Image (cartoon, rainbow, N blue to C red; front, top):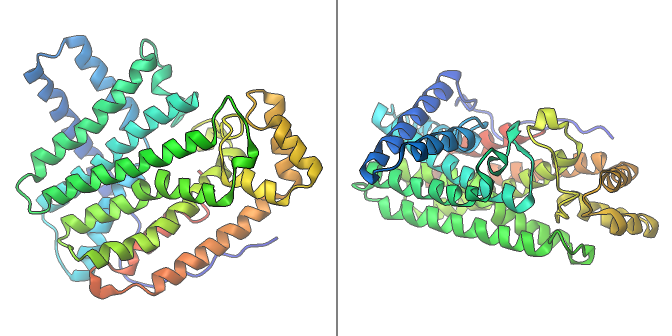
Amino acid sequence: MVVTHSEPAVKSNVTMKTPVEVVKQFSESYKRLSAEIIDDLKSYRFPPEAVEQMRNMLEHNVYGGKMNRGLSVVDTQSIIAQVKGITLTQEQIFKAHVLGWSVEWLQASFLIADDVMDQSHTRRGKPCWYKMPRIGFSAINDGFILESHIFLMLKKYFKSESYYGDLLDLFHEIAYKTELGQMVDMITSPEDTVDLDKFSAERTSWISEYKTAYYSFYLSVALAMMVSGISDPAAYEQAKSILIPLGEYFQAQDDFLDCFCDPAILGKIGTDIEDNKCSWLINQALLLATPQQVTIFKKNYGIKDPSCIAKVKATYKELNLEAVFAEYEEKSYQKIKSLIDQVDVSLGVPPEVYISFMEKIYKRKM
């Protein structure tokens, strides 16, 4: 099956690819923020060895990823300013950096907990934080600390802003929704009890919306909207209507890559099969499988045994799930493209914001 690359939803002169210099400046802002957090520990009379662990924890978990979520705040602010013909000051840009890194801090706290719950081995090409020497389950507390850092940064840089309360509410709301998504994910996919009858496309969609879409897509745009002075509730509802479906597509893509992407490229070893995950792949497979193939899944899915994992993957290939995903990916693109084409620009957010997200993830390989 051949799937062609569709034309972009909107053609524009607005720059949507993150320039190298912007990435460099964003990275420099991390150094400033992390140094401020470390320096602040003096007021708590923090022991030297604990300071060193905090520094290592930040470097290991916050810094070193693709930074897509954080840079999306910066990119969105830049696109809105370009369309309005506004030249951003260094202070305005830095405030977007703070919000972007706040998203990265939140992401890091989630990943620490997720890796412990899934008993994962690697993350971003390195051992998971809880797998590091002398860390173990104390990683759970480290995840709490990372989330607390967010509110220290918001207080320091945004307390005098009129939208400070909205920022706090947004982070609390998104964190709660993400945690609800994780809870349902764990209930649906307990490692000690494999019951494929509990799986469904509807359940997968709900988990994707709450566990991934809100914090990975909507949060970044909403933060950029706030720092850009957009307050109309209709603008935020419009953003959700596009970014939540985009997040669901991203999660299906993530599930596909977990199985079919080379771990050396992906940066982690995929564990969805052995972890009994209610993923997009297994739900598609169950819809297409013969009774004999369903039996193979029931006997081998969720089992931490390389031979069982291999049997599931072999059955996925028999069902030609790579082609099934390619078709799903194209349909998702067309659906989201249609939503972008209907954007009401009078609400303050140009369609280029949403195009930039789609261009970053459409047919990604890692």
